[in-house]
Image 1 (cartoon, one colour):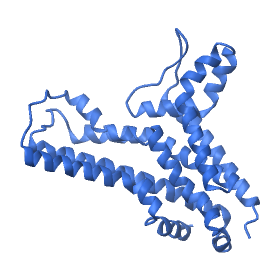
Image 2 (image 1 turned 60 degrees about the vertical axis):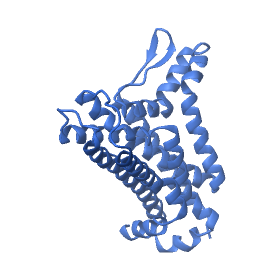
Image 3 (image 1 turned 45 degrees about the horizontal axis):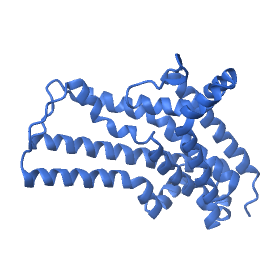
Image 4 (image 1 turned 180 degrees about the vertical axis):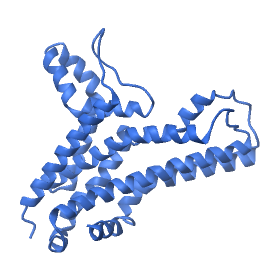
Length: 282
């Protein structure tokens, strides 16, 4: 199994698409941070800005972790997962690697590498942003009193925790579409459609609730769309309240939303494994 993971990581780590959809995040953050630091060095200290309270500053320092659960972030993740899973069909390379490994190991290795690469890139981007903020404190952008390393670490771990399940779900969903369609284009389109529907959920739910309130509420509770939005809001420290019909608001705890999305992630993974075992790829 470890050999399968190493081989997958070796194949993907320097791929052009990996740079465009995964490593691009820390690279962009680093470029922006260097640009800001250089600008402050050249222009000197700017006008004084009112200092935020320590709690607000700590919360805002973890703002980057809102990106992985946002639609643009998940489109990038889905695009990378499309490459990882559907790319083998486009390159016609499944028949070359299947004889050397069990099929479940090949799929599991792709899940592990895709999730690991995405998470590593986002952790690196977050740490680069924190380092840049600390360096800016020597250029006049002071850190408020009362901010501690423990509080910052806790805020970032909490915010990151709300993105892990959406990342895993996005990868599992794209992987399932890839195995079912055997097409990179179809996988990308279906993944993007799901993400678009997620963004349209509030409007669709309000329109449907006016005609079939009981069914609409049940569907919203069971499908992962609302729960993905709720987890994304969790990275901001808030619960997402869906206004079905004022004053009726639908809301779930983050733990409940995680459980629902994890269930759908496991289901997508099971479908992927079962379908892949049946495919004739010789």
